[in-house]
Image 1 (cartoon, one colour):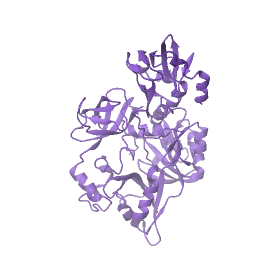
Image 2 (cartoon, rainbow over the protein chains, first blue to last red):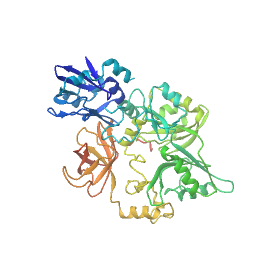
Image 3 (cartoon, helix red, strand yellow):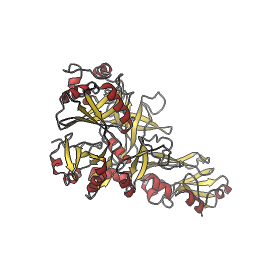
Image 4 (cartoon, rainbow over the protein chains, first blue to last red):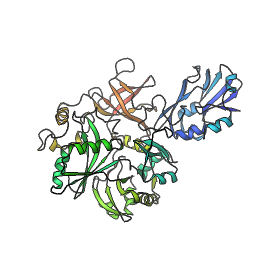
Length: 120
Length: 400
């Protein structure tokens, strides 16, 4: 079950580790991506702080940490080829994995229906 | 992600406003607005107009298509200003008047030719960059959208009463790329005989149009001024050629950056003089020190002195060593750590045809010769960049 943020990120939870990426809506809005910067494994992220950057031809956009947590893994494949994000933003184009400081924070995020109402 | 994901985050300072939802008062629409909507454009406010930022193909593909075949751009937001002699005066009177506003050779400009020029401020800064075209009975200027009202006001204040200044509503299309000549030639076979910077009045689908062989991409191509009520029909006739696809402002910006062309308001402006901008070539020798009509334009003393002395900072090209784009506003440093900034990036992004990030910046010429390795600060990190000659892609104008 995925959760979503107002800043157009998605999270999928497995135990206390969430996989984080940008939504299909965001990927569509951004267009072809040419550069991605991901956090370092082990980094402690605070909710609403910049965690990653995705860049198109024209602009750089921050990807904010959706909740507090520690980065456990990053997707090197999207750094090597940022078009993977555009092609499959909610699958192979995931960005990083985060061990949640408070697993209950996940449940406080939007569900798919609430996000769908926002992103249209 | 920022709330509107297309808006840049930390370092974007995007050259174009990229939000389509920002309230911006009453935006003007070009005569091609309905066509943009039919083509599925994503619109953006730009210089008071609602303009196509991109079409469904996206910036990257639009950019590459313009270099591979032909791109059609709506640039109707740009200002078109006609200068003609009032009764009792001549076209040469207009030329002389224009030379008092712009350091160009209007008297020597042949009928059917166009030049790039600068509207200089009283202190030698660049109020605008523009095209000056000469027709048999008038000069026509094409000026930047954001400056069109200020430019017209300055010309009205500067030029004598003998010059009639008109800015009639016209649409402006740009058709750019190696397939442009064939595509436009289907509507007007005469364009094949035009060379780079030629201008002509031609009938397209029975509408009187002003066509110049020029553009803002580094490619061969044309700019086509049409009556407003015929613009859509002409645009659709061009798009009927399968080599021609619509291109938005996003790719227009990446194309001009790769071509090393300045964006007024970013790379040049009132705080930059022509020598710093590397635009001395746009001032013909006849208007420079020792020329037959030396000076005599706003800021002449400062501009001619700057040319003579050589600039303390110069517009240069940058190639970041890695994949990370270096964008507008990034500070340049001589060293990987410490020290004061020695320059600043004025345009930067990813160059789709180069296949790597590219940027333009100002830096002291002695610190930034071609081949020099400097560092640009991006999100607190110093990224190595190499100074390179402009343009990033070779121009492919039809000069022959």
